[in-house]
Length: 294
Ligand SMILES: C[S@@+](CC[C@H](N)C(=O)[O-])C[C@H]1O[C@@H](n2cnc3c(N)ncnc32)[C@H](O)[C@@H]1O
Image 1 (cartoon, rainbow, N blue to C red):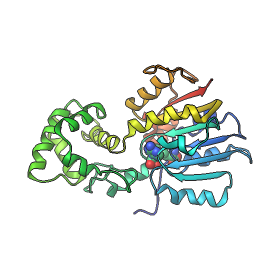
Image 2 (cartoon, helix red, strand yellow):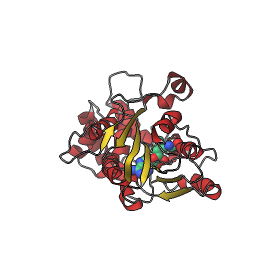
Image 3 (spheres, helix red, strand yellow):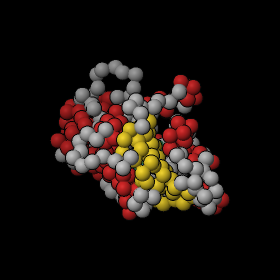
Image 4 (cartoon, rainbow, N blue to C red):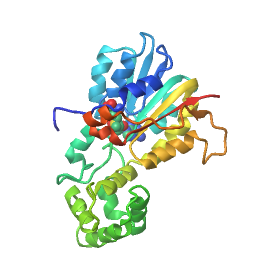
């Protein structure tokens, strides 16, 4: 493992301006990562404000423990954000932030298998203590399931061709490495694009293995219970699938019950040009804010 862990938090001032409605309040950072947003939130809270951070990746605890040692307003739990209903009390929070996806340091830890650059085992679990790895899934799932994941989560036009090739390949030999999978995807891609052809497929597998869509839906539903009236939820998504779920939830679409969260502004907030120049990873960030109104 590398000693230097890096992840530049995105849209920090936009998060603070939209999240902190009361500096004396109680806040939840659902995606601690390396603590970029957590540190900024703590800087903007008063001496009686509190912040609980969670992350499903047990490695986040190492960074969180440095803050735990010096700031009594802060607490940390290794957990999935879909379980905030069990962690937090009803009507307690003034604000919730979730910065979705994985951090640069998780992507850079090549042995975790999130990246198609290099030749490493296909793991892709955010919490390596639970659930099947990407290798187990890709070598056992049905052709239909693989095709659906690539189509729905990867929005890949060639999902049928790639899934067929995977089934053929694994009859000869199990697919075990990021390089094997990336090469297989390249061999099925004829259109030239700026992005690596494996980008969307790797993201789709990661989202499936970590049940990211269900996690996000659960977070949205549970956030309504744990927020106080006037409390806010800030979500940063990095692609249209997640953003569509967030937007439709805040608009009350796909729901029969009354919605207590209302969008603060119809338009999403995007990073400034300066930020995108400084931190190109921020270019696809989409921030939405909703407030609990009843
Ligand atoms: C984009 S990073 C967050 C970076 C963080 N805001 C920072 O400034 O360092 C996303 C983090 O969320 C975590 N994560 C993703 N899905 C999660 C979930 N369902 N529950 C808890 N943590 C999750 C990942 O492990 C990762 O550390």
